[in-house]
Amino acid sequence: MRLAIIDMGTNTFNLLIAEVSENNNYEIIHKDKAGVKLGKGGINHKVITPEAFNRGISAIEKHLETIKNYSCDKIYATATSGVRSTENGKEFVDTLKEKFDLNVKIISGNEEAELIYRGVKQAVHFNNENVLILDIGGGSNEFIIANNSGLLWKHSFQLGIARLLDMFNPSDPITLDEIKNVEFFIDTNLTSLYEAVKEYKLHKLIGCSGTFDSFREMILAKNGGIPEEVKKKDSYPINIKDYEQLHIDLIKSTLEERKKMEGLELVRVEMIVLASIFVNFIIRKLNIKSLTQSAFAIKEGLVDKILNG
Image (cartoon, rainbow, N blue to C red; front, top):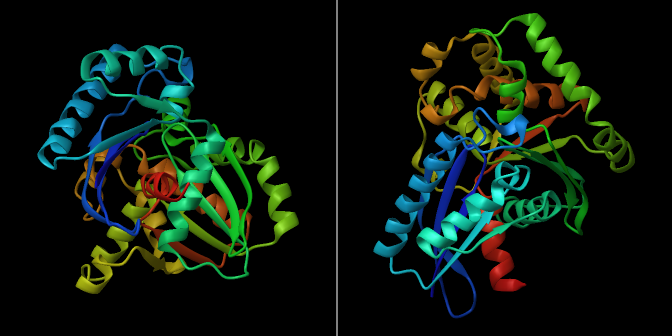
């Protein structure tokens, strides 16, 4: 059996196609993404703009053509913050049903966090040490605390990078005062996270989805390229000092300079600076000592839920 998963994020619409064996194991046979910027120009006004609406439809059309080529048996599509927090999100989902006969499930922040956890635990080995998982999105950021006994705490914060970009509209390059303003805003909205970290005590951060994928690719490119054995791995330990240097490079950079940075996808050049400010703030605030990138997140978590309940 072949499954197709479409994860409709606020910045990108991601596609995963998996071949499922008789014992419910699966192999990923295709991955793709389409830059949509669904939240651009409207996310803080709770609306998908007409331009973003059309970009979303075009991305779904592209993914459905790919799915057809792979002869998939079932399609599962989920929509996250960029749809659920907008007044015309249901209209967008209804349009996809009418135009493509595609059923899209709009999932809550808590459901999103659970699926992210289910994805990450397939890529990263957990022990009895508590870890913090962070998925940075365009509309929301999910934090999860877990260990090998399971998920201990989760919360979805309306602090996605498309929201911050729309709210702060930083200079090019960003100024130190703007960084302080962004950090102050982040800080004042993470009280429940700080309380949870105080209770569960942790020093390890696992990052997943596009931001951390970019960090991995950029650091590896800077360090001489991506070895074949690393390409095949579902997780990668990021040296904190390597990340700190990358962060400095990013906050000093202009948009045009970022377009030329090896390992950074064009769809992320606008948001990567604010995303890095967010990550850097969390690392310093929570005294994080270890950083790991997980290549698995919500899509793989959904496959796990479909196959294992």
